[in-house]
Each structure stands twice: as structure tokens, then as C-alpha cells.
Image (tube, rainbow, N blue to C red; front, side, top):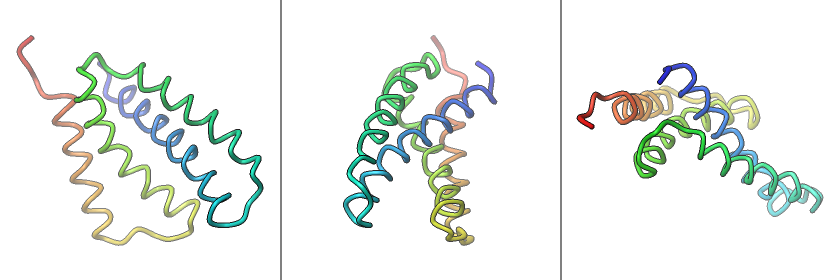
Length: 111
């Protein structure tokens, strides 16, 4: 399992999930048009499909590891989309989740 492929796939999956949740947020909370729900549904469908492409781990481990990347990508979203720069505590928290993801996915295990 290639590290960059695995992390990249997790990151793309996180973007699909965040986008699929962000668009309804814009409609419900920011008064944006209801048609944003269509790309939101498509994004969440892509998110679900992408989860099936992840490493050959039990589903619970895959979802747990994905959570670490999700946290890091959410902070990139915070900075790039919301315009709020993550602070040092955000960065420390994201680093901890990424370390957790690496341990879950890349730890040597007996088969």
C-alpha cells in the first residue's frame, strides 16, 4: 500500500464529504439557492463510493483512519474556504489525528 496514494485517497474522500455537507449548510444557514442540494447529493454519493476504494482494512479501521485525514482536510477547508487561519491548537490537534491515522493504517499487523 503506497503512502501517498492512501493519504491522497483519504484527502479526496474528505473533500467530497465536506463539500456534500457544506452545500446544504449554505442553503439552510446562509440563504443560498436550494439547487445546491443536487451537487451536495452527488458529492456525498462520490464520497460513499470513494470509501470503497480505500486500503484493504476492516471497515472500522478504514473509517477510523479516514477520520484523521478528515480533521486535517477540514482545517485546510477552514483556511481556504471560510477564510479563517487555523491556530496552533488546531494544528497540534490535526497533527495528533494524522499520527493516529498513520498508526492505524501503516502499523505492522499479523495476518
